[in-house]
Image 1 (cartoon, helix red, strand yellow):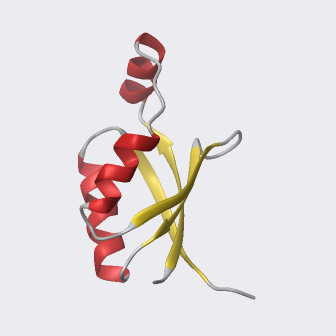
Image 2 (spheres, helix red, strand yellow):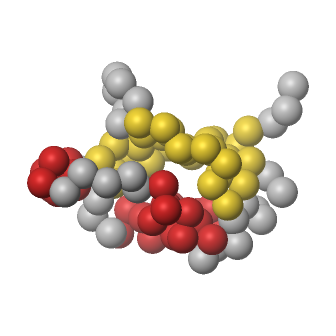
Length: 88
């Protein structure tokens, strides 16, 4: 299956919620990705321009796009930047 790398930012509201109730978002992310037929290979919080980076294996572009659109409409993330990863 293709591998996709996505960077993004948490919304101000999401960050406020994480401060009030800190939790590892890996399980929620994994369930969300599984609904599109994919799986999370890794997930990182990052410093700099983006707040997180995820590495996801998904059946194809349609499925990764559906997952990203669904995540974006949740209101918790923004500025999602997906890339298809190719082996060297």
